[in-house]
Length: 285
Ligand code: PRP
Ligand code: ZN
Image 1 (cartoon, rainbow, N blue to C red):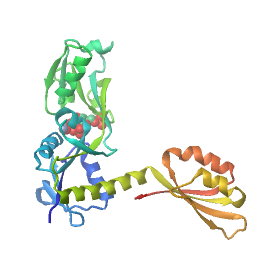
Image 2 (image 1 turned 180 degrees about the horizontal axis):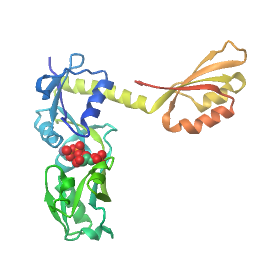
Image 3 (image 1 turned 90 degrees about the horizontal axis):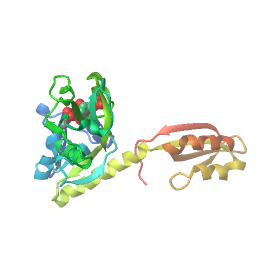
Protein backbone atom coordinates (compact mmCIF):
# COMPACT_ATOMS: atom_id res chain seq x y z
CA UNK A 1 0.00 0.00 0.00
CA UNK A 2 1.19 3.51 -0.85
CA UNK A 3 2.39 5.50 2.15
CA UNK A 4 2.91 9.20 2.62
CA UNK A 5 6.52 9.92 3.51
CA UNK A 6 7.04 12.66 6.11
CA UNK A 7 10.45 14.18 6.82
CA UNK A 8 11.05 15.51 10.32
CA UNK A 9 14.07 16.90 12.18
CA UNK A 10 16.29 14.13 13.55
CA UNK A 11 17.46 16.02 16.60
CA UNK A 12 16.87 19.62 17.60
CA UNK A 13 14.19 22.03 18.66
CA UNK A 14 11.42 20.53 16.51
CA UNK A 15 12.10 16.77 16.83
CA UNK A 16 10.16 15.95 19.97
CA UNK A 17 7.31 18.28 19.16
CA UNK A 18 6.94 16.77 15.69
CA UNK A 19 6.70 13.29 17.22
CA UNK A 20 4.22 14.58 19.80
CA UNK A 21 2.04 15.89 16.96
CA UNK A 22 1.80 12.35 15.51
CA UNK A 23 1.00 10.95 18.96
CA UNK A 24 -1.74 13.54 19.52
CA UNK A 25 -3.21 12.56 16.15
CA UNK A 26 -3.23 8.90 17.31
CA UNK A 27 -0.55 7.93 14.80
CA UNK A 28 1.90 5.54 16.44
CA UNK A 29 5.32 4.92 14.95
CA UNK A 30 7.54 1.83 15.06
CA UNK A 31 10.94 2.71 16.40
CA UNK A 32 12.60 1.54 13.15
CA UNK A 33 16.16 0.24 12.92
CA UNK A 34 18.79 2.95 13.14
CA UNK A 35 16.16 5.69 13.47
CA UNK A 36 16.46 6.80 9.85
CA UNK A 37 13.03 5.61 8.79
CA UNK A 38 10.03 4.59 10.89
CA UNK A 39 6.59 3.56 9.77
CA UNK A 40 3.17 3.39 11.32
CA UNK A 41 0.85 0.38 11.51
CA UNK A 42 -2.25 2.44 12.22
CA UNK A 43 -1.89 5.24 9.65
CA UNK A 44 -0.34 5.08 6.16
CA UNK A 45 2.76 7.17 6.75
CA UNK A 46 6.51 6.66 6.91
CA UNK A 47 8.73 9.03 8.84
CA UNK A 48 12.17 10.00 7.62
CA UNK A 49 14.56 11.56 10.17
CA UNK A 50 16.78 14.24 8.62
CA UNK A 51 18.82 17.34 9.44
CA UNK A 52 16.30 20.17 9.34
CA UNK A 53 18.36 22.12 6.79
CA UNK A 54 18.09 19.19 4.35
CA UNK A 55 14.30 18.84 4.58
CA UNK A 56 13.33 21.48 1.94
CA UNK A 57 15.52 19.82 -0.70
CA UNK A 58 14.22 16.31 0.05
CA UNK A 59 10.64 17.54 -0.28
CA UNK A 60 11.40 19.57 -3.43
CA UNK A 61 12.96 16.45 -5.00
CA UNK A 62 10.06 14.22 -3.94
CA UNK A 63 12.28 11.89 -1.87
CA UNK A 64 9.92 12.88 0.90
CA UNK A 65 6.31 13.84 0.16
CA UNK A 66 5.90 16.29 3.01
CA UNK A 67 8.10 17.74 5.73
CA UNK A 68 7.85 19.43 9.09
CA UNK A 69 10.37 22.23 9.41
CA UNK A 70 10.79 25.77 10.69
CA UNK A 71 9.62 28.62 8.46
CA UNK A 72 13.15 29.99 8.96
CA UNK A 73 14.60 27.07 6.99
CA UNK A 74 11.99 27.51 4.25
CA UNK A 75 12.72 31.22 3.98
CA UNK A 76 16.41 30.49 3.74
CA UNK A 77 16.39 27.67 1.21
CA UNK A 78 12.94 26.50 0.24
CA UNK A 79 10.95 29.46 -0.99
CA UNK A 80 9.66 27.44 -3.95
CA UNK A 81 7.81 25.02 -1.66
CA UNK A 82 4.15 25.17 -0.77
CA UNK A 83 3.32 25.53 2.91
CA UNK A 84 0.44 23.17 3.65
CA UNK A 85 -0.24 24.27 7.21
CA UNK A 86 1.25 26.30 10.03
CA UNK A 87 1.63 24.01 13.02
CA UNK A 88 1.68 26.44 15.94
CA UNK A 89 4.70 24.97 17.74
CA UNK A 90 8.44 25.66 17.64
CA UNK A 91 7.86 29.39 17.82
CA UNK A 92 11.08 31.38 17.70
CA UNK A 93 12.69 34.40 16.07
CA UNK A 94 15.69 34.98 13.84
CA UNK A 95 17.74 37.66 15.50
CA UNK A 96 21.01 39.52 15.49
CA UNK A 97 22.99 39.17 18.72
CA UNK A 98 26.18 40.78 19.97
CA UNK A 99 28.49 40.27 22.99
CA UNK A 100 26.72 41.25 26.21
CA UNK A 101 29.22 43.93 27.24
CA UNK A 102 28.95 45.85 23.93
CA UNK A 103 26.99 49.09 23.73
CA UNK A 104 24.31 48.86 21.07
CA UNK A 105 23.58 52.11 19.31
CA UNK A 106 21.12 50.89 16.68
CA UNK A 107 21.32 49.00 13.40
CA UNK A 108 24.31 51.12 12.23
CA UNK A 109 26.36 49.17 14.80
CA UNK A 110 26.68 46.37 12.24
CA UNK A 111 28.47 48.47 9.60
CA UNK A 112 31.80 46.74 8.83
CA UNK A 113 31.12 44.06 11.48
CA UNK A 114 31.57 40.32 10.85
CA UNK A 115 28.32 38.36 11.39
CA UNK A 116 28.32 34.55 11.66
CA UNK A 117 25.16 32.74 10.55
CA UNK A 118 23.60 29.65 8.98
CA UNK A 119 21.04 31.93 7.32
CA UNK A 120 23.09 34.01 4.84
CA UNK A 121 20.23 34.64 2.39
CA UNK A 122 17.78 36.02 4.95
CA UNK A 123 20.55 38.09 6.55
CA UNK A 124 21.78 39.48 3.25
CA UNK A 125 18.30 40.59 2.29
CA UNK A 126 17.83 42.28 5.67
CA UNK A 127 21.20 44.09 5.54
CA UNK A 128 20.51 45.40 2.04
CA UNK A 129 17.11 46.67 3.13
CA UNK A 130 18.68 48.46 6.09
CA UNK A 131 21.60 49.78 4.06
CA UNK A 132 24.20 48.08 6.23
CA UNK A 133 27.57 47.02 4.95
CA UNK A 134 28.63 43.99 7.00
CA UNK A 135 30.63 40.85 6.31
CA UNK A 136 28.58 37.63 6.40
CA UNK A 137 30.38 34.48 7.58
CA UNK A 138 28.35 31.41 6.72
CA UNK A 139 28.84 28.52 9.13
CA UNK A 140 26.67 25.44 9.38
CA UNK A 141 26.35 24.94 13.14
CA UNK A 142 27.27 26.19 16.63
CA UNK A 143 26.99 29.76 15.39
CA UNK A 144 26.73 31.01 18.96
CA UNK A 145 30.38 30.24 19.73
CA UNK A 146 31.73 32.31 16.80
CA UNK A 147 32.20 35.60 18.71
CA UNK A 148 33.86 33.84 21.65
CA UNK A 149 36.52 32.25 19.45
CA UNK A 150 37.13 35.40 17.42
CA UNK A 151 35.56 34.12 14.21
CA UNK A 152 32.99 36.93 14.12
CA UNK A 153 31.85 40.03 16.05
CA UNK A 154 28.20 39.04 16.20
CA UNK A 155 25.75 36.38 15.13
CA UNK A 156 22.45 36.00 13.33
CA UNK A 157 20.59 32.91 14.55
CA UNK A 158 17.46 31.33 15.96
CA UNK A 159 16.43 32.47 19.43
CA UNK A 160 13.77 30.53 21.27
CA UNK A 161 14.11 30.51 25.06
CA UNK A 162 17.25 32.67 24.81
CA UNK A 163 19.30 30.24 26.87
CA UNK A 164 21.84 29.59 24.08
CA UNK A 165 22.54 33.33 23.84
CA UNK A 166 22.68 33.66 27.62
CA UNK A 167 25.18 30.86 28.11
CA UNK A 168 27.41 32.33 25.40
CA UNK A 169 27.37 35.86 26.85
CA UNK A 170 25.45 37.30 23.93
CA UNK A 171 22.43 39.62 23.80
CA UNK A 172 19.67 39.87 21.22
CA UNK A 173 19.57 43.34 19.64
CA UNK A 174 17.45 43.08 16.48
CA UNK A 175 14.59 40.71 15.66
CA UNK A 176 14.60 40.13 11.91
CA UNK A 177 11.74 37.66 11.57
CA UNK A 178 9.47 35.31 13.53
CA UNK A 179 9.15 31.63 12.74
CA UNK A 180 7.21 28.53 13.73
CA UNK A 181 7.01 24.94 12.54
CA UNK A 182 5.17 24.46 9.24
CA UNK A 183 4.24 21.53 7.06
CA UNK A 184 5.54 21.68 3.48
CA UNK A 185 4.52 19.50 0.55
CA UNK A 186 5.95 18.21 -2.70
CA UNK A 187 4.30 19.84 -5.70
CA UNK A 188 3.03 16.66 -7.41
CA UNK A 189 1.51 14.29 -4.90
CA UNK A 190 -0.44 11.29 -6.21
CA UNK A 191 -4.17 11.26 -5.44
CA UNK A 192 -3.65 8.51 -2.85
CA UNK A 193 -1.00 10.54 -1.06
CA UNK A 194 -3.08 13.70 -1.29
CA UNK A 195 -5.94 11.85 0.43
CA UNK A 196 -3.64 10.64 3.21
CA UNK A 197 -2.36 14.20 3.66
CA UNK A 198 -5.93 15.53 3.84
CA UNK A 199 -6.75 12.96 6.56
CA UNK A 200 -3.68 13.96 8.48
CA UNK A 201 -4.48 17.68 8.23
CA UNK A 202 -8.01 16.94 9.42
CA UNK A 203 -6.59 15.25 12.53
CA UNK A 204 -4.06 18.02 13.14
CA UNK A 205 -6.75 20.70 12.96
CA UNK A 206 -9.00 18.85 15.38
CA UNK A 207 -6.11 18.60 17.85
CA UNK A 208 -5.15 22.26 17.39
CA UNK A 209 -8.73 23.39 17.82
CA UNK A 210 -9.07 21.30 20.99
CA UNK A 211 -5.97 22.93 22.46
CA UNK A 212 -7.51 26.37 22.10
CA UNK A 213 -10.74 25.39 23.84
CA UNK A 214 -11.88 24.00 27.19
CA UNK A 215 -14.88 21.99 28.27
CA UNK A 216 -16.78 23.88 30.96
CA UNK A 217 -19.39 22.56 33.41
CA UNK A 218 -21.24 24.62 35.96
CA UNK A 219 -24.35 24.82 38.10
CA UNK A 220 -26.71 27.65 37.20
CA UNK A 221 -29.78 29.08 38.93
CA UNK A 222 -32.68 28.61 36.49
CA UNK A 223 -33.72 32.27 36.63
CA UNK A 224 -30.40 33.30 35.02
CA UNK A 225 -30.09 30.36 32.65
CA UNK A 226 -30.57 32.32 29.43
CA UNK A 227 -28.02 34.96 30.36
CA UNK A 228 -25.50 32.26 31.27
CA UNK A 229 -26.16 30.43 27.99
CA UNK A 230 -25.44 33.69 26.13
CA UNK A 231 -22.08 33.95 27.90
CA UNK A 232 -20.98 30.42 26.94
CA UNK A 233 -22.87 29.55 23.75
CA UNK A 234 -20.52 26.64 22.91
CA UNK A 235 -20.44 24.91 19.52
CA UNK A 236 -24.16 24.79 18.76
CA UNK A 237 -25.66 25.49 22.17
CA UNK A 238 -24.90 24.22 25.68
CA UNK A 239 -26.45 21.06 27.16
CA UNK A 240 -28.74 21.83 30.07
CA UNK A 241 -29.56 19.09 32.57
CA UNK A 242 -31.80 19.65 35.62
CA UNK A 243 -30.15 19.19 39.01
CA UNK A 244 -31.83 17.14 41.76
CA UNK A 245 -32.01 20.43 43.71
CA UNK A 246 -35.09 22.36 42.52
CA UNK A 247 -34.48 25.61 40.63
CA UNK A 248 -30.97 24.66 39.45
CA UNK A 249 -29.49 23.23 36.26
CA UNK A 250 -26.13 21.86 35.21
CA UNK A 251 -24.78 23.46 32.05
CA UNK A 252 -22.11 21.93 29.79
CA UNK A 253 -20.38 23.92 27.07
CA UNK A 254 -17.11 24.72 25.29
CA UNK A 255 -15.20 27.96 25.73
CA UNK A 256 -12.15 29.41 24.01
CA UNK A 257 -9.23 29.53 26.41
CA UNK A 258 -8.47 33.15 25.53
CA UNK A 259 -11.96 34.22 26.65
CA UNK A 260 -11.96 32.16 29.79
CA UNK A 261 -10.91 34.62 32.51
CA UNK A 262 -13.05 37.46 31.21
CA UNK A 263 -16.14 35.25 31.05
CA UNK A 264 -15.64 33.58 34.40
CA UNK A 265 -16.31 36.80 36.36
CA UNK A 266 -19.50 37.40 34.44
CA UNK A 267 -20.64 33.82 35.08
CA UNK A 268 -20.10 34.27 38.81
CA UNK A 269 -22.06 37.53 38.77
CA UNK A 270 -24.96 35.59 37.25
CA UNK A 271 -24.85 33.13 40.12
CA UNK A 272 -22.96 30.25 38.46
CA UNK A 273 -21.38 27.86 40.96
CA UNK A 274 -19.21 24.73 40.95
CA UNK A 275 -17.46 25.72 37.75
CA UNK A 276 -15.25 22.93 36.34
CA UNK A 277 -12.91 23.40 33.38
CA UNK A 278 -11.55 20.35 31.59
CA UNK A 279 -8.98 20.09 28.75
CA UNK A 280 -10.15 18.70 25.41
CA UNK A 281 -8.26 16.18 23.30
CA UNK A 282 -9.95 16.48 19.89
CA UNK A 283 -12.54 18.88 18.55
CA UNK A 284 -14.49 18.33 15.34
CA UNK A 285 -17.04 20.93 14.34
C1 PRP B 1 18.60 26.71 17.31
C2 PRP B 1 19.78 27.66 17.39
C3 PRP B 1 20.22 27.58 18.81
C4 PRP B 1 18.96 27.20 19.56
C5 PRP B 1 18.35 28.42 20.23
O1 PRP B 1 18.95 25.46 16.86
O2 PRP B 1 20.78 27.34 16.48
O3 PRP B 1 21.18 26.57 18.98
O4 PRP B 1 18.04 26.67 18.61
O5 PRP B 1 17.34 28.07 21.15
P1 PRP B 1 17.26 28.70 22.61
O6 PRP B 1 17.10 30.18 22.46
O7 PRP B 1 16.04 28.06 23.22
O8 PRP B 1 18.50 28.34 23.36
P2 PRP B 1 17.89 24.46 16.11
O9 PRP B 1 17.35 23.46 17.07
O10 PRP B 1 16.90 25.27 15.36
O11 PRP B 1 18.65 23.59 15.09
P3 PRP B 1 19.98 23.76 14.27
O12 PRP B 1 20.95 22.92 15.01
O13 PRP B 1 19.62 23.20 12.95
O14 PRP B 1 20.30 25.23 14.24
ZN1 ZN C 1 19.47 23.36 11.27
